[in-house]
Structure formats: structure tokens, C-alpha cells
Image 1 (spheres, helix red, strand yellow):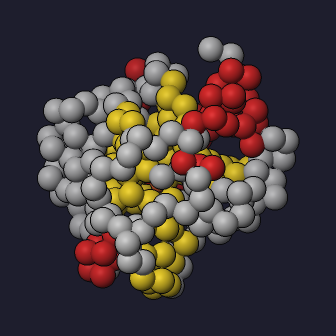
Image 2 (image 1 turned 90 degrees about the horizontal axis):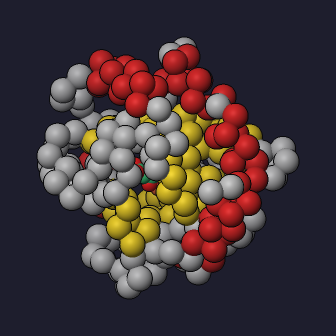
Length: 235
Ligand SMILES: O=C(O)CCC(=O)C(=O)O
Ligand SMILES: [Fe+2]
């Protein structure tokens, strides 16, 4: 599928999934680095209030900030950059490379929008890379409501229950998911093994670096920089 078709699909649905975007060899390499970094049972870094309220159970790692340049190769790949430009326009920029690790039995991530949707032009683009298969057996599927990037605020309510129209995505090793930061999305609990995803966040030229400082959940708005609940939401 060509870039312009993918862009159309992205604009319509708020996400696209492209299987076999990356080679197995590339995935094996960064998967090894990730497991080496985290080990089998790393400690959780968020505070208890965040964990309890957000029902988000991931441990982040920013490898490029620590000089682990192996993650650069993916970001530099021409088709990856071309697709990003098609979606975000000239002047788009890379925000961060964040590895997300979840232990076996962890909750995944509750429904959220990565950034507030009030300004439809200001959003992050998640460029999610998967180094191993995500299946119904492993759990950790990504769930999204198609078109929700244009539906405004995620409705207040139960943080994890199913939403009307939701679609369950099961990326495989080497899959790329491009996901609009305003899209309503969640990650299902991890059933077997640990779960890893790598998010190369990017944004359009006019979007500020800290666009994802405030995340919208169904029960709150949370600010990461201050580790504060900015607003309680009741549905
Ligand atoms: O790990 C995933 O598959 C999705 C994570 C997510 O919601 C995000 O990076 O914004
Ligand atoms: Fe997200």
C-alpha cells in the first residue's frame, strides 16, 4: 500500500497497522537490548496514586537519551520517515524514543488520549514498533476506536470497560502501528510473558515538545511533569 493510501486511512481512522514493516533481524537486535536493559523483574517507577488511578502499568526507558544508538537505525529508515512526513507534513520532528515494558500479569493501559484533544491541530503521532508477536494468548492487544481522533474528548466513565465500536489490534513482530494521539486507545492486560513496545513519538512543526505532558483518562486528566491529577472526571 502506497504512502498516500496509508495517509488517507490514517486520516479516516486515526491509526494504521502495517505488518512486516521491519525485518526480523532488526527486531531481534533491539528486542535483545530491551530485555538486557530491563532484566526479568524491573521495579515500577510511577507513584502509587498514578498506578492505582490510571490503571496504567508500564515501565518506560528512553534509550537514545542514554546514548544507546542502536535505536537510531529504525528512526532513520527512509520509508519510516516518508510515511511520517506524509502524515505530519513538512517540518515534522521526532519527539522521543520510548520503550515501554510491562510485566506478566500487569494491567496494560487504561483508555486514554495521549494529549488533550481541544486543539485538533496539536497532537503527537505514536509510531509503535513491536519486537514480538502480540496475540490473544500473550494479551497486551492494542484497542482503538476508529475515527475517535475526530470525536473530541474521551467520555468520562469506567477506565477499562469496552467502548462501542472498538477494534482490537494484534501487531506481530516487525509491525508498525501509527496512532494519532487524540485517538481513544488502551492496552489489554498482559497474560503470558512480558510485553514490549517501542514508541518513536513525532509531531508536526507547529506542535510543542511537551504536548503529551497531560494525558486524558476516563477518570482524570493527569500531568506527568508535576505527577498531579489536574482534574477528576466522573461519568
Ligand atoms: O504500547 C502500546 O502498544 C501502546 C502504548 C500507548 O498507548 C502509547 O504509547 O501512547
Ligand atoms: Fe497512548
